[in-house]
Length: 290
Image (tube, rainbow, N blue to C red; front, side):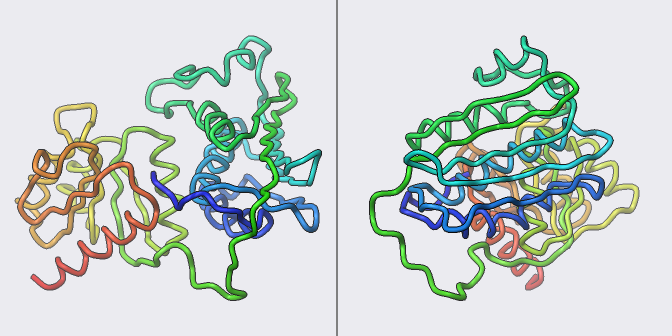
């Protein structure tokens, strides 16, 4: 997903604004607590990238606590920057896993349980912004991720006292079709925070079976590449053939021509939250006009 350009941002505000997004990814048996030091220094970041980096860490912490538990997001000024700590009381890691946890493409998650690449992505975010990311973990005692970001030296971006929501608001009953659990959880959290009612399917085959069985949605949002007999384009064609009143959006990294289906809107990847909300809202408006 793309975000806004890097500018000095008020760290306390950025973390508080993201809380709704994080809560949207958590079940009722996982509690998220904030412990923010007053007057955190500003940092120079793309705010959307910061939100997504932290969201992947929240999702990792959630997955480490299948029976529920507590996540603490703490932040304080330290040395010449801001230290953000995200701790959980979950399963923790062995020394062997922790030694490789930040390696690109390394994962301990099984098939269908996500790419397991949240830590490497967050580590890459820290490096891109001149910071660091480190881990503390012990099997059976939980995990703490420390994200350090340098203090901004430029003037802080002036923000109004009561700004409009940074993410566009939407409404509607959405079926999200996505086989990667981490991508699915990230998009679900973002769209729920924007106001959509979200349901999910892991494959295009599963989505079509549920629709044929009688489930109805205002709109289907599907990725292109899917395991199974049907891909996202196949699903879009079947939905428009069988349920012409249902809106469909295809998220794709290919050209729009390659996934062109009459009456179906393409959403180029990578995209940010604003863009996917606008795409869904636009597709729903067009469908209602037919």
